[in-house]
Length: 84
Length: 244
Image (cartoon, rainbow over all chains, first blue to last red):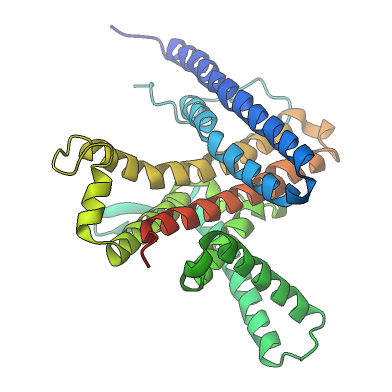
């Protein structure tokens, strides 16, 4: 079955839009991490720098899944692997 | 495709790597790209800084002043970071970690100076991940007994039942891929955002994108550098184990 090139590009754009929905997960996760870090600083203000660096490290690792979605979207938009 | 990715009002949206010069390597066409050029610029800057630092330390004073102060501060902070997360294993690795920290940091923030960041090319970040992978397994075989490694690889089940072995192998291989993809995707997303803002908004984007540069180039770049070095140190520390 033959498809028009514009049809494939449009479907790639829809797929890219769906792929970046993956950003919801890391957003929720990073928010939870930041909330708990704020609570920890409130309980123990002396350990603020340690808590901040641990929080940033954990958030950056949690961000990876969202970045995979972003990467799929970028591949679909710029590399266009579905075009024959 | 002629009409760009969006109906743009401004100039060209340009985020891709471009080939500059093609040559033949054993009959296989190989390109010198913009990434090579940016990488060369970053390396020249770092080499120049290192030579200047070496000259300054050669005639270093007892009471440091000016440039010597800055160098001592950088070295002290990097060593402190390595000691803080590796403990007694730190002296063997502080040189390597310091080197990749400075290299990734300068590469990430080189977007501020008009370069395309070299780390926004998977060909740059993947070797960094592979170096971490090799360091992990070299140190694992250096410090642990083969029997302990085998038990570790069959981990949730007893060592005579290696059903989980393939899954553990996959999770080991995922380490360099996820390390390098994290760095690559972060820097690439920053580059694409800045290119979209400059390309789509035209003259509207005059002064205020500086604030976005602070986030996408400085903050994100520094955080990702820190995360890459931190994870490398943690993995190596786990591979060395507690016996020694």
